[in-house]
Image (cartoon, rainbow, N blue to C red; front, top):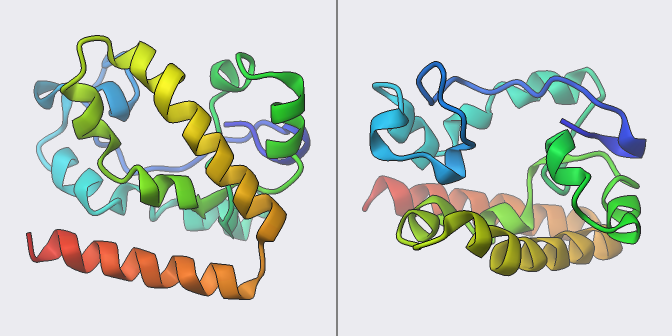
Length: 156
C-alpha cells in the first residue's frame, strides 16, 4: 500500500479470498471467499493484523485507508498530495460510511465504474474532512461508531 509521503509498505490482513483471485474484496463474488472469509469481512476482523503496521509506524489507528499503488496513480495530484500528507489508518470515516460497499457493488451492473464514479469521490470527501478536522474528539466518535456498527452486525 501507499502511506504518508508516498512511502510504500506491506499492509497486513487476514486472508479472506482464495488463491489466484484477481480482485479486491470489494469486487469479490461469494465463491471467491475462503471458508471463513465472508465472516471475517463482515466484522472487519481481517483488518486486525494492521495493528502490526501501526506498531511499525507505517499506519495510524485513525486516518484515511491506504490505497494500492495502482489506485493512487489514477487520482489527481492535488488529491493525492492531501491524502498522502498523513499516515493512513485502520479506522476511516469513509470505511464506516461505506461499510456495506461490497453488497452495493455486487448488485451493480458495472461495479468498477460505480466504484470509481460514485463511491471514490464520496470517500475522498470524507477523508478530506477527517484530515482537516482530526482531533481526539473525532477519534472518540469513530470508536463509538465502530462499536455501534460491530454490535449492529452481531445482532443482525
